[in-house]
Length: 113
Length: 113
Image 1 (cartoon, rainbow over the protein chains, first blue to last red):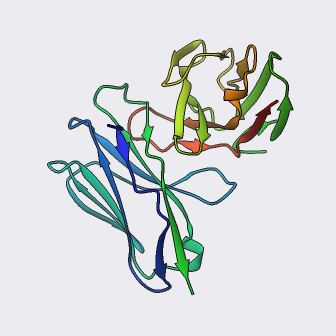
Image 2 (cartoon, rainbow over the protein chains, first blue to last red):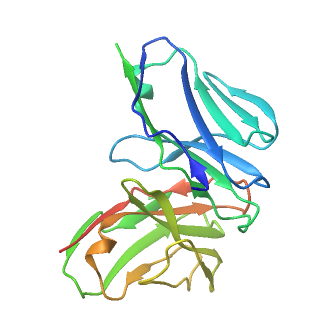
């Protein structure tokens, strides 16, 4: 079992719809959770991080964390074509040092006109 | 230029040659990281450094060597390149450990023939 799992997609949503991206992790003691966005041919950039159970909102983005079920999700409201990218879930597992992120393989999102 | 830079951006080499990828950051961040990104594997940590002269292995360190004599530089050396080391390499830095944001460089695309 991979430490961090994501559906590779592509996830296709129409413009203006809500995109829901999901990620599960295996280490129950994981502490910190991150969502990075990566455009094709570019480097990853941080969108959101979340540490506590529940929702965290930032503009059109909402991160949701459920530690009991070991999943973290990212909702993108009012999806725009510019949101088309690969979204990487990253986790700091309990077993690693505090510095070491473990990434999922990413979900490719396509926002269609 | 401010930020984090990598050089070269593209490199083609032959099996058995030594290759050094450079990473330079201007923020004086304590932590620096090297990742490789491959289809199907996502981002995998090769080595990281918590400060000058302090380095540690990540998930896939075999065949790579790092050094960090100065805070701002973190070169990655492939001692004897192999075809399996063909990949996109990203350097990243962060100010603190734990949940602090990692900032990524633009990446180096390395091809080993």
